[in-house]
Figure 1 (cartoon, rainbow, N blue to C red):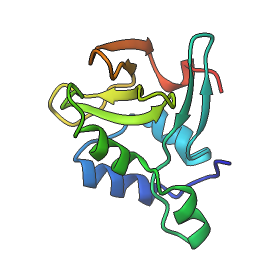
Figure 2 (cartoon, rainbow, N blue to C red; figure 1 turned 90 degrees about the horizontal axis):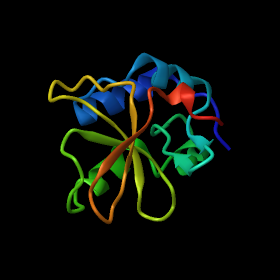
Figure 3 (cartoon, helix red, strand yellow; figure 1 turned 180 degrees about the vertical axis):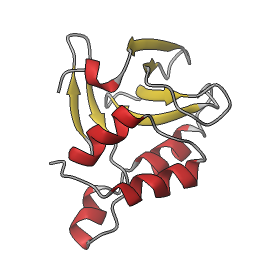
Figure 4 (tube, helix red, strand yellow; figure 1 turned 135 degrees about the horizontal axis):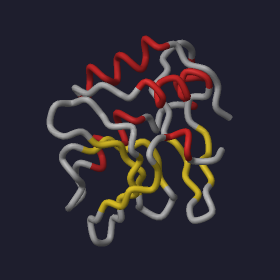
Length: 130
């Protein structure tokens, strides 16, 4: 079950990955760190930001954005400018991307692990129903 997160943990992840998350995404995650996103076509589990505030939160956020992005970067065809923010449970990911400057776009993409293709699924995280 997702819960609020202190913005300092988002900043730690930004520093770790050398990116800046979009404000809309950060605001959503501050209120509810992780959780499900369900659309008519997809169901995703959002990766949380790593919350080190207590043991319970550490265990609930151990599959965090930083770790999952580092793991995804080991996969063949994962885009160099992508940050993994969630999974469909079948190896496919939802990602945010940047154009080389580290400032992530609001646009949410589906990354197909079988063919390495990106498909835009939303203009922003708020377009995906929870």
